[in-house]
Image (cartoon, rainbow, N blue to C red; front, side, top):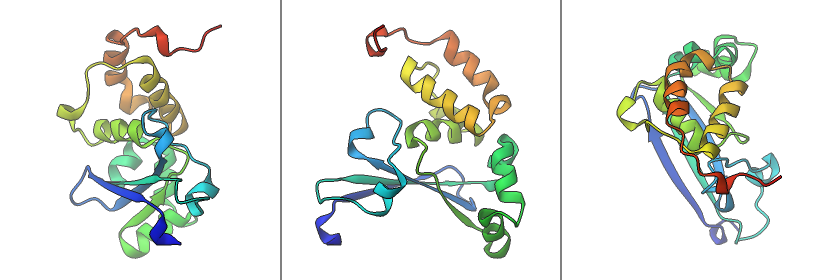
Length: 165
């Protein structure tokens, strides 16, 4: 029953005139990791009332996303993709990103939308690895080149979070 399921929602706005709404679902056990990668089936159907999730949406500019990422460019610029068709016909689009961590993606969106005051000047190892994965997945190397060098120069070296061996 839907009323038995706890779900929180958070909306982040990177562009008040944004035309793309990115949708992330983060299960409670992923909240501290920055990963937030539940399986697609866990997003569509929760197993119990104790499976608490948090839906995070990010209102972004499709143009900024396309300029920063050839993957988003292909997805949004061509009508052969569902997202591109939706954007062209209704001037806005919703994109579910169930495999991407909302915490890391929030940092990427901040960089892409030039929200420099909200971007940390240093990062620890785990968030950097999550960011690196998203950067590679969406081919955002050029957009993150300067800030990633800043992060690498100021990386905190807390080795306790690294796997042993």
